Amino acid sequence: MAKFLIEVPHESEKMACLRAVQALLGSGSHFVANADWGCRDGDHRAWIFVDVPSKEEARAIVPPNFRTHAKVVALNSFTLREIEGMVREHTK
Image 1 (tube, rainbow, N blue to C red):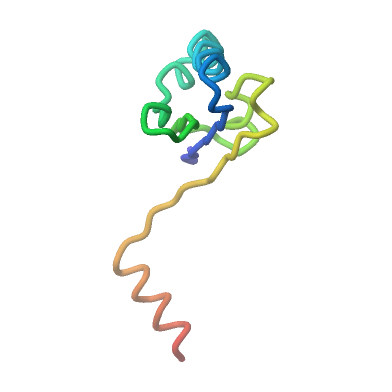
Image 2: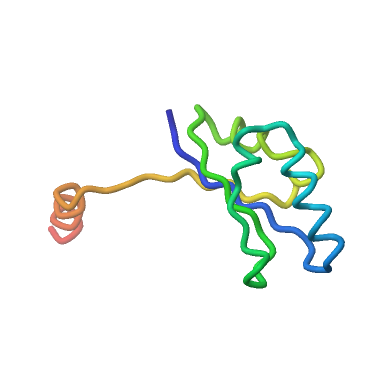
C-alpha cells in the first residue's frame, strides 16, 4: 500500500473557513474526519495522511467540492544506505 499526503486548501474568510471544516468533518470519511488543520495559525489548509493503493484513490477521499484544489503527494522514505548508494552512482 502506498502512503499519500493530501493537502486541502480553503478560503480564509471566517465563515468560509468554518464551512470548509464542517464539510470535511461531516464527509463521513474516517480519513477526512481525522485531518489536521492549520487554521488557528493562519494557514487555511487541512492535511490528511492515507495509505491507499493509488493517487486516484487518495484524491477520491476528498469531498468533490474540494478535489479540484486538493494536492495529493505520494510519500516515500529513504534509508541512509540507500542514499549513500545513490550518491555513489551519481558521482562515478
